[in-house]
Length: 420
Image 1 (cartoon, rainbow, N blue to C red):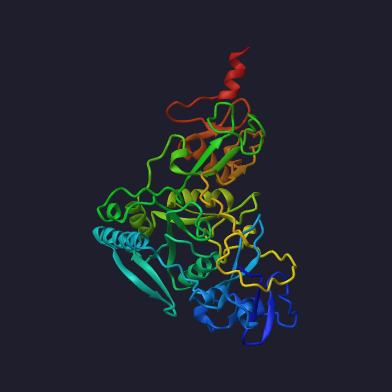
Image 2: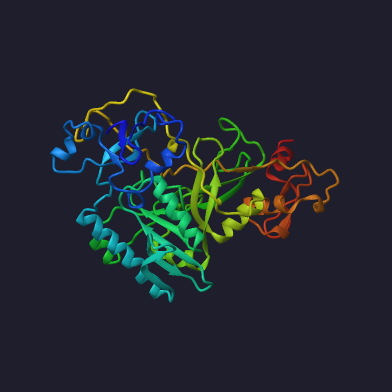
């Protein structure tokens, strides 16, 4: 893969390792050369060796001397590199069969539930075609995109934005934990299954992309760790975070692809975007229950579940090494430019969560001083309806004060009293 290319339209040499590509007078050059080949002249970019009348390894092998630009991945850097056409991934027979079987299963599942569904649906300008669109009773449209091979982040972004602009919520399906689409749009990951198993109705569990909201009070009796204290400390606050079904306490039942087909169309499950709180990632996209979404929005005061425009992630930012152009044709040379393996993007870990500040002691013991957010969080953390909440007679903290198994003092105060 080369770090230089010839622009046949302008008759200029482009150095991909320079921030201005060697042409500060052309501020739109980067956008022009990284456009999809279908949207530009296929012979716009030429191998430098071919242009200089030297041997082009690609052309000598019966392939094309014309090139396209993509982002490489080397040692944590994301340089621009030039590669020879063709650029499209040609699915293997097995991938094509998997893709077709999954698409048909989604459409057939929707039909069994009485939902309208159609395969191969053009969107907007017809350049983008959704694998399947399922229409819910309220007119909600879910655009299923089965992507079992690698797709660039920019393509995921472009197609997702196009779908949203035309009133369709994208739902990307992957089988690989390193898929670039993960957390760049609403997504779900399934197992890598033979097409025959998919067609025959074998269980397709959603392994990633669906989470449940867990809310807990950070006290010594809690089964979960504190989100803000190091070690085994407990801060007394109320925490909330998102967990995959297997890591919920108690463990939740798995979600199957049939569940998501129905629930996404009816609004029982909705897409949510949780901004990152410290790891360098832009954030997490996930499907969640509508009830969990409502509680989360109430806790954090956020009413927009999806970002208007997905943020560019740290590992997508182009890096420029500012090197001299290597003018030799590098087509077919495996060792010259090693592209690091794609990192795992489907991470089971919690998202970082949200912490509601510890309630101050209510000296007046007036429950009316409790805000609706505090009441909602305490209700979820303590597992009781809001009307059973009250203040501990000892410390004034929120607790289950009324109803079955109620008490006057919280566990902490009871332990202190019993120790006297």
